[in-house]
Image (cartoon, rainbow, N blue to C red; front, side, top):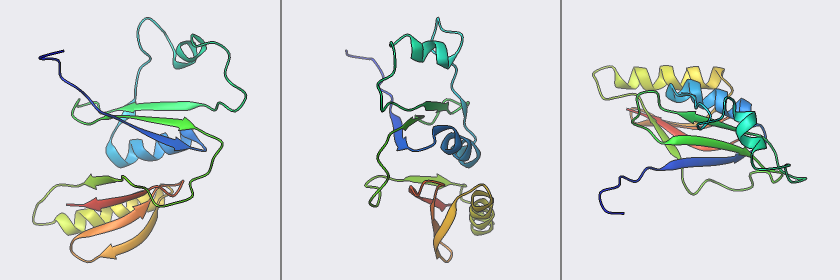
Length: 140
């Protein structure tokens, strides 16, 4: 379709969609995504697909209120995370004279929200993991 803009969503397989969505809302300033029209709630939308499969879990969906970032989907799956992510998110605080202090402040905020600081590369970035162990970085 010429002229049609493509968008990207990022989807996380997870054990607890609501908990992970709450963490990433704080990390990125995202908000819950409203259900697609004509549905009044996400539950109504999910029910439109028929009865869930036996191993099918819940989900949560977030969007960037400013419209710039990708939509995030969190889908509950029975399998646990077993290896390092092949793709990770970089949370950028913005370049400024106090950027490193802002990186450390954001890392501490996310640690208090249930994340884990793995490695601090002094003056450059902080490697972290979200509450389910998904690796990401906080950087200027």
